[in-house]
Length: 282
Image 1 (tube, rainbow, N blue to C red):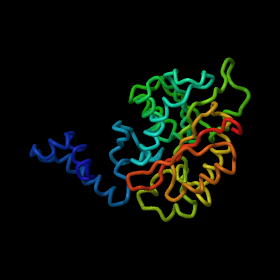
Image 2 (image 1 turned 30 degrees about the vertical axis):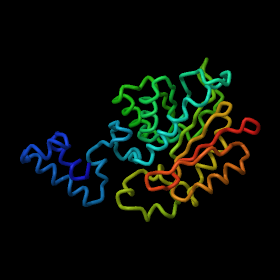
Image 3 (image 1 turned 60 degrees about the vertical axis):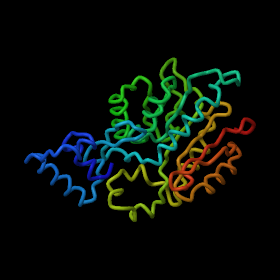
Image 4 (image 1 turned 180 degrees about the vertical axis):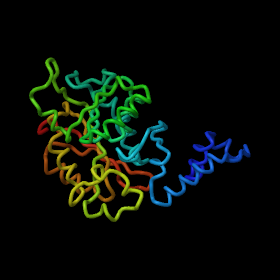
């Protein structure tokens, strides 16, 4: 739907079809609400924050300033993980593809759009969702509850893997290896953030800032994730424009991953990279 259609269908609580075939005038209250929405849009506030929701993978998510707005490009990351989930054995398995469940870690979960979508489409999987922001985790938990899969996702506040390294874990708990680690990390160069469109300036900087060259989190993920990936486990990450070769170089220098493939988005831009933990060096 167009932005105008989104505003009006939300305001009139009708479908897109009804919008065009039912000549329903706005009430005075709806007119005031529409005026408020238009003023906020003119100020640059993202429509998703104004309406309070966004769609991702056909699922409705609550969104606000606590987390980044889900992007269509990130759906490719989820689709890639789903594609691969039946192609590797569970950790500790026999090497044959006989296990129907997978242990998946979502690093930088934000609104929870990736974790919730994976839980919805892979109901036999166990999802762990991590974010450094407690506020982001709050809305991610809300979205898990709203979509009825709260029991399938474990949420944890952590700066990437930092909490996983704490030895004093609760009795009986241990960190097990993951079959797949997915991440849409911050990948905007620090100096570029202030040049982004006005709308993006309303989103949390923590979810955007990838350091001076935009690659800080790729370096950390590639360095730290092998310790938490099972044998032959996958690291699947979203990429910024033009970052594929740089991320591949970081991976090659680490000698701990094998490059599997890159997936292009709808604009033919390399958007997702798939790495497999090297069985010999990982």
